[in-house]
Length: 331
Image 1 (cartoon, rainbow, N blue to C red):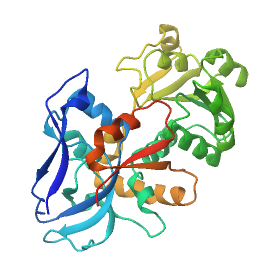
Image 2: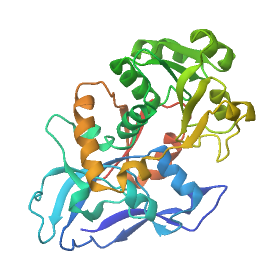
Image 3: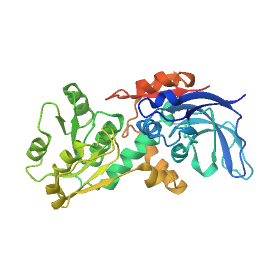
Image 4: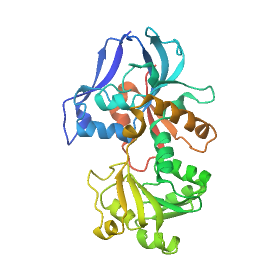
């Protein structure tokens, strides 16, 4: 048996996928306090594609921000985990340094491994961290009072849909910006209070109309670029925007008028908020699990590809406005 891994060997800004290759390495051995997990399922998340595009692990590193697997071996001193146990290894932090889940076996400190409850399926466990933790933490940090409006861009994404459902559960009203009119009815059915189609409507004018001229309480933006500035113009005086993605690039444009209104634009990242701290990881897992179990944070339907078919899978995962999560599989 061997460890099969997708590594990034070199960097090509125009075609980062061309630098990926499949390699075979020895299965790692756990040091004291560590666990080796056989990863069976792992999603291709936007954050993984960003890691590859920036060349952060271009010296032979392995991406992969989350996944689901079975304990393969435990190191000395590990007592709360055992061989054959279903687990989620919190690989988000390791993916930034090249030791992520896009490999068959991963060695990780035991306090970054969470036993999967029986009520969580394998497919749900594989996508339990990045989107559910982010949607939950973003909305919690935005602190929108019950009955007030928040606005988000890219609302048709998997994460955007989770925000809609969670906001509804918490009594927060949501305004959701999408590019395609056919998404409107679907998001309304999920619990969206308002849906603005950016290709057909003036986002700022509609937001002011919906809120009676007050502006929304806060905003979530994974797009960046001019979208950040548009959302800033929708936000109340002294409100805030969390920018948590770079779908349109690494620059954001905001009007000075909105800055003089004390609108705060802040970068928000799960990596700095939680995934580098095992106590925060375990706390989030405990808080989010019942919300996922009860469908309050809905996870996506999945489309599976073999780990060896990773390039096709990544191209599929990079398609815009996808509501299905691509999983890489290794038995």
